[in-house]
Image (cartoon, rainbow, N blue to C red; front, side, top):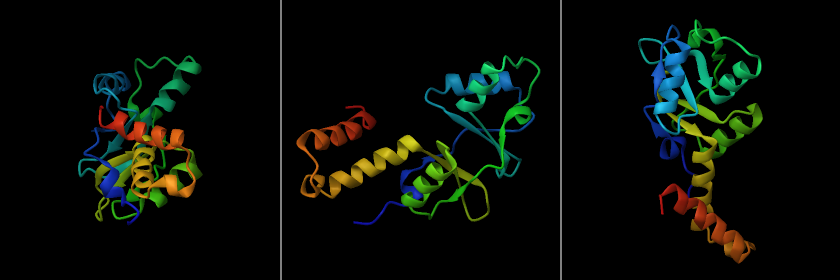
Length: 159
């Protein structure tokens, strides 16, 4: 069995915004979208322009009592975004996220256009599926650990 590729795990077409978008509007988009932990900032061609706004960025603003009413997402986004190509391995994606302490990793195509995003949650679920496929009980996992891993997969599938 092969290590999954990023394209096999990513969520397609993440929500993107332009850097001049009102921060209040971006926060509302994240809230209304359900389980959205980050918004990628792109240009007209859909290329990441060096920005992402995350839940952590919002938390930082609140903790510092910043008045966000007149801010744009470009004013407060995390710059120098790290991206990964769709053909990269899941292991590489997890390594990048762990090394840089990030929870969301934008996926780009060969032209640098955003095509998806992978979260640490997505990666954990994919790795749980891989462990089940490997029959981890043969690797010394306890019955309880096997049950927990299956539960992770069931939660993802809404079971």
